[in-house]
Length: 118
Length: 112
Image (cartoon, rainbow over all chains, first blue to last red; front, side, top):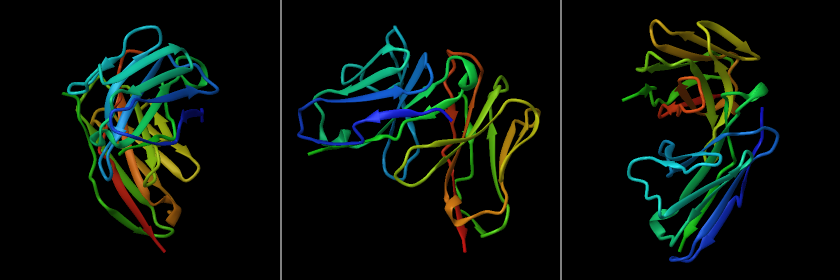
């Protein structure tokens, strides 16, 4: 399958600071990337859909000013958690959907970023 | 609202048995179906994709799709303890603008 990388894999930050998470599709182009959040023992929760070159579409209840998403190229999307608070501590996972070729329409997940806000 | 339903389990099977995981969906326009495996504390990993009615086999895994019944299943033959994980079903319409809908997952436990 295709490879999606995510960086950093874990981060600890102080309350009030901002954290940036990068998601890259390494061997395929992804017009669309997705950002999910998952709390322990709970299911995936879609936060936003990111399309290359356009504004992200946020799910209901997700604050777009708090979770800034930029999809600058066909292989890179970033999520910035601004003014993080302890309740933002979670497992953030990106995924990329292939836009052509062998991986067309298939969605591959990055390894996730575990965020802890103190 | 598009829904994907899975039994949360846990489904417990002995090593070497066949594990059968089921998923139903509500959107009749769905065209793409995926099974993911998620180990505890890790992100989901794509196991199988299926687009046409019938069976699709890949190693020990077989995905079965019945669009008329809005039903997709995953069979795992010769189950191993390493197969113990949560299995997520995802369903979507084809095309760049569609967002996959995920089920809540079925927990599978394969005991020695």
